[in-house]
Image (cartoon, rainbow, N blue to C red):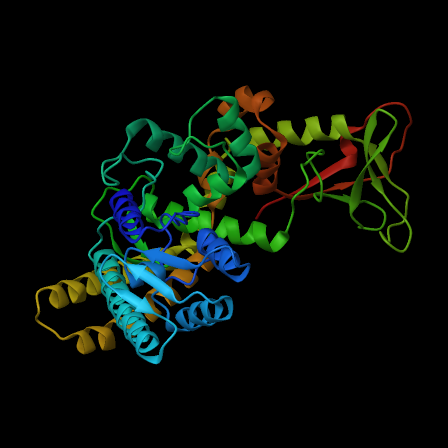
Length: 442
């Protein structure tokens, strides 16, 4: 770019032209159609009569889009600007021959840019199907600058936050914890929930190479998490998006308690400094209004019961049943692996010249559709995610409970308790544990 500027300045000096302004759009292609601020400023200056000639390194530096050339020519004609000098040739836009030559230059440049873009797209697609890393300057979190070598420290962090996310903790909460621990991102930017979700949902950490958001091959790099964990993350993410919950949680048992009189839902409701769960009457809540319980004792009771139950044979049996129900997951994973292997073989055949581009495309498209459909099925059948993390860990969770946030605590409770019924109070002034009747999961 600097050399081109120097050549343009030299040409202006040779013509005896005084340089009124320089317009430089770095890193924006004249073919892309993206906004070029400096080009826009130059056009405004021409329209305002501030320029009487234009010096450009080559016509394809000015524009590679025929429609943009016509706009430029019309603007120059209206402003009386006839001379467009380039380092390689001059163009007089004031006569038909000059405009004709400019149109030829623009059309040729557009054709070359289009062919180059197609070659780059084809190359990017081929690299993806071979499992090779993509371009881009940013290093992916969990991998070194070569985008292949696993960074062991960051990989361990990914495994940790993957487990927490699968177990129900929000991306917002995870991002806050990472920031609190002063763990740097790969780009040096701040941790945000979008950053966490982007890392966790990326196929690359499961050893998959994606192209335009779709996993198309097994990657050449080693995975950080398993394919099953990847599907669980996608399933949890889809569930959270459907729920649309954004506000921070304030009550541990929100949505998990029912009224013992009308079976309606109990809602969190504070009275002064006292936290309570209340059956609310009225059109919005449709409860009977006959049951209220102070939050801390019922939360403490159910927490103790859940953590105890996690270490019982009953929960092992529940998990075994869920694993049996998830047998389809293994079959779908195997099917997806085979499809991706076929996709990689197909790409290698094309790269070796064994099949034509038309044959490659005809075989690739149906394979891609099958992979997408299988991925969608896997996301639907991923199950037993939270229980996998916590069954048999009751004692350890009890020790760590106070240090967990409410998102994590609620996810553990929800995995074990379907709901709990709160019976009406029979005596005033004291909490009666017999009022709480839990309904366990399965």
